[in-house]
Length: 246
Ligand SMILES: NC(=O)c1ccc[n+]([C@@H]2O[C@H](COP(=O)([O-])OP(=O)(O)OC[C@H]3O[C@@H](n4cnc5c(N)ncnc54)[C@H](OP(=O)(O)O)[C@@H]3O)[C@@H](O)[C@H]2O)c1
Image (cartoon, rainbow, N blue to C red; front, side, top):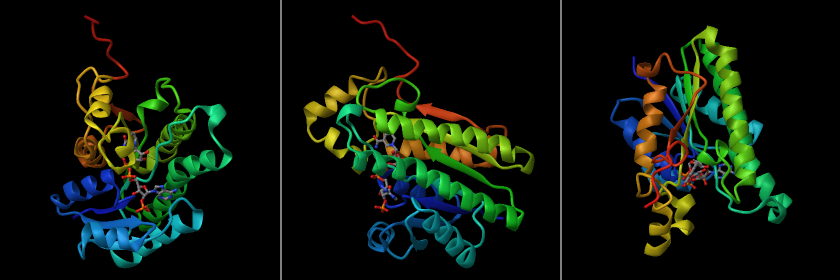
């Protein structure tokens, strides 16, 4: 039986990479964006397109309902919605804070709730993968809002993994470092900026969306059937390694 995979933030850098890899597995794929044109630009007529804002309760319910009615209940969720804000807490406006929480935490919470309800009513096994950031696990300057939102996301993943373990459902997250996608474009807009960023990582270079997509699809797959409640860090050694300074 082929899987039905719902990808949120599908027209973004990571979302596109997840969809491209998942398409090779023969999964039926529903792609979600707030803007139908983003989906048309990214995927043409391929896949099932769903225009919904999953950062709201109603939007997340709508996205899952549309998937159930057109493809069936999704057995896998790759939640790729999110944004980045670089600002110290004392210079973060209320509007910026709300935007970060909406994009990174509200969207994850509402989408997970709707996904689990649909999987339970269809009585199918299900797994979901979310996207955190290394800034949730280690203090990185000027990331207070994103760290708060993604730290909440990681805690949500652990709790949901506990709640639904007996039902055979698995929930995990990945934590990338800087990843070469539209969200990071302004931090990588010149060769000098790219070089300075790459130097922050013991393994060098900037992470790619495809590397993260590969890990997400593994976590979603049955090959990871003993893995739940985890956040898998993929960061070129940023958080775990302190190389010799020469
Ligand atoms: N790029 C990095 O360096 C980096 C590092 C660590 C973690 N991350 C995380 O990786 C994930 C994927 O990001 P990406 O790099 O692929 O960025 P991206 O290309 O900007 O894609 C993210 C997508 O999320 C959707 N989105 C943004 N704000 C939203 C909101 N308020 N409500 C609903 N949808 C919203 C947008 O889709 P539509 O406009 O089409 O709806 C956007 O295309 C995010 O969770 C991000 O926080 C990224």
